[in-house]
Amino acid sequence: VMPSLVDQVQKPWPTPPTHFTTNKFTYGYQEFVNTYGIPRYREANPALFTAATFPFLFGVMYGDIGHGLFLFCAGLFLLYKEKEHDEAKLGEMAGGMHAGRYMIAMMGFFAVY
Image (cartoon, rainbow, N blue to C red; front, top):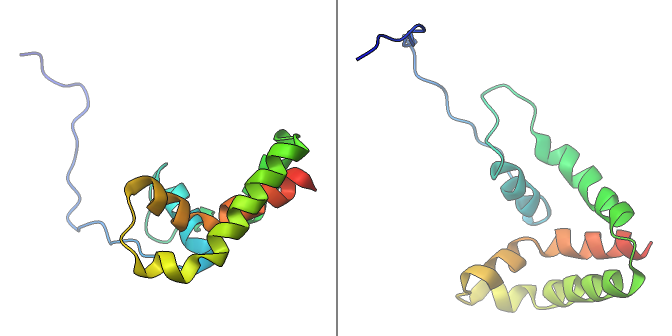
């Protein structure tokens, strides 16, 4: 066995947990950011920047009005059925679409805009 050149020194204290309070609108963006990694303690929450810039940049890159209109209508439909889906037991795909309903509607809006 070859010895390691870099030894990992254990910190004498545990890493504090990170918690971000979300609402219905920011939940989808927070989950999206968490797929890339959870920020450390005392770091800025990148989900706020993502909520402000991601739908706009999606619309800039997704320049098809027809598909953007379809995406916007699908997002509005998910928002319309929000209370029914909150109470229902949804599958993995439908649950993911329900969690990102505000994101889908905004991405469709900016794709048309």
